[in-house]
Image 1 (tube, helix red, strand yellow):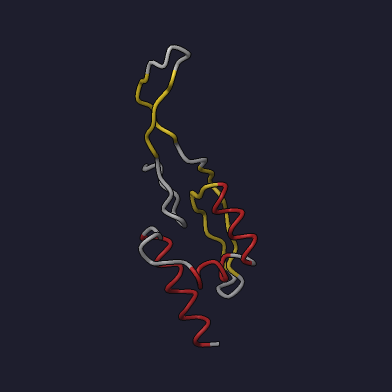
Image 2 (tube, rainbow, N blue to C red):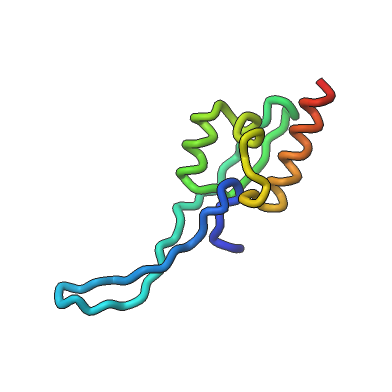
Length: 95
């Protein structure tokens, strides 16, 4: 299971641990990933996604999963999230 947010594409970054003596050793900064269940109002379904805490705040700010997917870029989304986005847009067009 990759350490990558399914909605924003946020992944691990690299940097240095710096000691008091300025010795540098490599380290990784991992995203704060959580398993969340998000509900789509258009599809009337829930989806279990592994997303970052920042992505969860963005989903809430934009007004839910449907509004987030409308503005989301395809290259940032995972394959599962792309399928959800396609289903949401198809359901909105039919309504």
